[in-house]
Image (cartoon, rainbow, N blue to C red; front, side, top):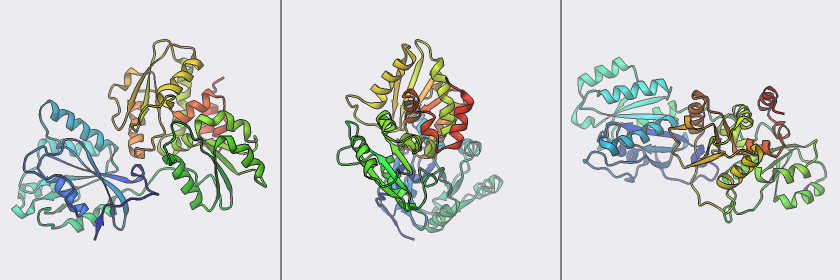
Length: 415
């Protein structure tokens, strides 16, 4: 079975299954990543704690397809920095789709590893155990403990490349197949005309479209629809040029007012961000979160959560526009805190509302994990597109393609 690094234009990193390689220091986690890749890309050392931060390596796991391997710091790391590394590892595990727990064949299961197995069971994360370094022999007590654990395990040697292909085959069979709701494929049929409105503004990457736009185009084409892509300024001309009204119009949230005015009421309309809210998050839950907007008070803290990092623009959507619109809408003096990248704040109980981006740069599992944290603490969450559409008065119109979200809107009855 061959493997290697490859680029997949139709499968972004955030859409691939993430496999976390976890275990204590020096059990061979980085060696296993290298063995899977067939390349010496991760640093391997006899010095404990070589891997300090989660390291992501994209690859093709044949015949499954593209995945991301995540090499993590040891769960037994020590000291102040070690505790921070373990915290990052635990967060990574919570957002992974699958885990490979690496054990040292010469040793017994340690207390830290027993805690790890209990944690994996609590969060219902499927995993497999790789017993590494069998070239030195296998501890019979370890085998007894694994039998008691009743978990699938394989004996391997990364140093001598023994058992790696068998382990890969088992991982392929155990990997979750569920990928969550589609973006657009269930909203269109073969031959439908779909108009995608893509403004080119300061936030648009030079010479490229943003990921949700690219993914929507691809998914619509896969359904044999006719896709028309235009800027918001040319939308009227496009609609006039079409022989019949389009079956669906999808727009960037920031252009929703102009687009809603141009698109006839009998044409279905939504936004890329709302598509992402369903695809990665929980659209009805986000609609429910809108109720909290009307109860905000002076001094309330609002978390703006962005899953990617980027240079702040002059009129940045998350840092500038949404805070401005929300202050105008509520007429309250609100405090906004920005959290960007893969790190999600641990103190979310300090906030009255979380406003999350579409999540195109993180996995659905990671987004679901964030939603679950907020839900357990009863912190309402909305995403950019849902909130923008609400503040601009186009809900429920942009929810018409989504029955569950529309039903949730009827429940909360915001005047």
